[in-house]
Every structure is written in C-alpha cells, then in structure tokens.
Amino acid sequence: MTPGYSDECRGKARDYYYNVAACGACAQRTQCTTAKHRKISRLENEAVVERQATRVAAKPEIVAERKTIVEHVFGTLRLGGHDEFLCRGLEMVRAEFSLSALSYNLRRALNVLGVEKLLAGLPVRA
Image (tube, rainbow, N blue to C red; front, side, top):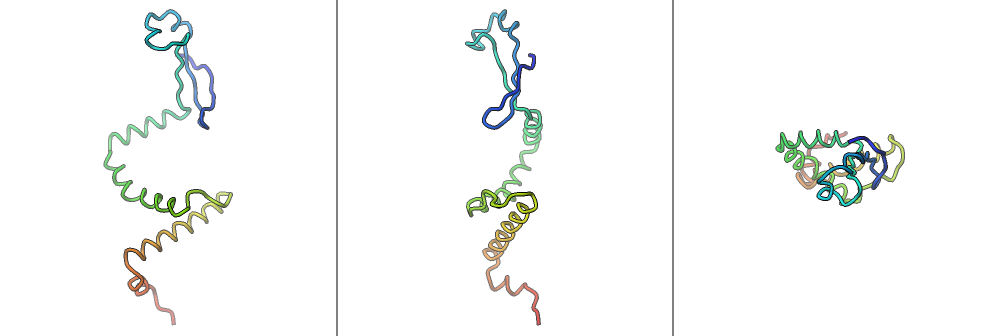
C-alpha cells in the first residue's frame, strides 16, 4: 500500500495508506470494505508502540513488578488531587512534582512507621 496522507485524529497524528487500483480489481473487496477502496491508518509512532508491546509480551513479570512499585504511587498522587500541574515551565513543574513526591513519601512514612518511630529516627539538634 502506498502512503496517502497524514491527519490528526483525537489529538494523535495518523498516516493513511491505500491502493485504489488494487482494490478496484480485487475480487474480495466486498468482504474487506464497503467503500471504493480500503484505507488503513497507523499512528505516526506505531512502530514504537509495537516494539514496546513485544518487550512486554516477552517479559510480563517486569510489568507486574512495575505495577507493585510505581503505579500505586501515581494512583495515590492522582487521587490526592495531583493529577495535573498548576505551574508552567519545566523547572516549575519539576519543583511542583518534587513537592508532591515529598508529601507522598512523608505520608507513606507516617503510615508505615508511625509518628513516634519517625521522630525517633530524626537527628537531634542542640
């Protein structure tokens, strides 16, 4: 199939492919499409998505481990109202995310250790 055109669908760039001459002479066209020719679309970065899917299929245990380590953190942050950034610019967004991560870590430490153990682990200043 030859590349036809590129367009955007739901905010994602897509490339469309078709072959009008081949579809017009094809005996199985009615089983394939009701249009004059078949048009296939692929995301602009479909190759990257396919490589990732291949890696995931080869080692599903890595995905399961990631779910236990990372997904809980981001889910908790999102439920806590940290699902979008209020600041603009990379430096400010990094600072905002760092504060969100710090608040998550403190809350998690309080839940796991408790206030007494957490305070006991802090250095004493004179």
